[in-house]
Image (cartoon, rainbow, N blue to C red; front, top):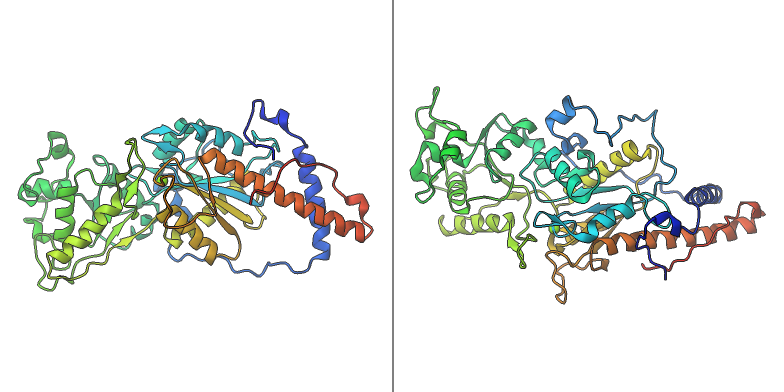
Amino acid sequence: MSSLAPSRPGLQRRQISSSSFADAFESARSNLAKFDHNSDDDDDDIVSPGLSLADSLTEEESADTPPSPITPATHPGTPRLDPDVADDFAFAFDIDGVLIRGGQPIPEAIEAMKVLNGENEFGISVPYIFLTNGGGKFETERCRDLSRQLEIEVSPGQFICGHTPMKQYASHYNNVLVVGGEGEKCRNVAESYGFRNVITPGDILKANAATAPFRKLTDSELNSSRDLLEGGTKKLSDIVIDAVFVFADSRDWASDLQIILDIAQSKGGRLETRSETFEEGPPIYFSHSDVLWSAAHEHVRLGMGALRRIVETVFAETSGGKQLKTHAFGKPQLSTFQFATRLLQQWRAEHHGLVESAPPRTVYFVGDTPESDICGTNLMDEKTRDSEWYSILVKTGVYQEGTVPKHMPRKLVGNVLDAVNHGIQREMARRSRALDTTSAGALSHGLSHLTPNFDLDIDDQS
Ligand SMILES: [Mg+2]
């Protein structure tokens, strides 16, 4: 078995010309198609109600911002077709615990990105997107961070974070409580999504410090928090919260828990009221449900999913056993993966020129959390007829070596570079087999002049 571990300069190890490979493969495939009338063109498109591609961009990007240097303003009529791009497979990556840990890149991640960008022995570049449950920043800001950390250009056109799908609710609610993140960032993100009246826990604490007895706002927080008791509003009970959105991890769990529970147990979301039935609260949305995540500490840390469970548990404890049903976006929700599918299709068209291309036959999803990454990928694979979704679990994050993952991946590897190499090797072995089959078919039909002429030195690792 040869290795795809890149050596510089990577292309020197190339055993075939990628163009000749692509040409040979393409002509073999088109000839094969002449004998194969069992196409699956009638497969249904994936439908994900309520999510649109524009959800991947912030308001400012979708409106005024010119395309980034790596997101050319291509249109269906003017694709920039890259002859060396892999058109039938792609990668999608979780970020924390796979590419980044504690704000620093996992060393193999930088190499893995180079392999995907063509520094491999086949000379092909492979489309990829990022799908993280994290958040708390503008998508553009997080992409800038990721670009610096991974030494590549990352475009918002290939990026989905936990709160991206919340944009679809911006026009549904008037007053929303937005929880989590640093300072005013999540309020700013929510407003950029189009939410009209965004209230934060800091605003409520500023209006009534007794709401959370042990939380004292700093001078800076007092300055940045809005004054809710101005204009026509005389008391907090004049304000009705229509929905609660937990955008990012709470920076003060105690006061945020208190305020979320107050609203959950209120009369229809009216602040400082208490329902007698505990059945009148507004909907509560979390951007994801991961209980654990991989940060700088040697052991995994508590995430937003833990707060969600605490909210639900304490609600029941304090309401005579009434159940609170909250909602979560992000992985492993199927709709998040369906959204990722459409984002990937758009990215392949706009960035790689794969405008008329069928969906990738295989999407390799690389993650570190069995409960979200692997569960969601396997579920997507079950539900999708267009593409195979192939789950790869790495050992650099939440999953601990030697334990049995709650959801079994198709492949367990050490790190993200191993994952990328595995996917590419598996694809090349598959192409090799397909070409062998095509060659045999061509020969039997007197088409020997179309037989591709090259050699692949890899084993099937699937
Ligand atoms: Mg992760």
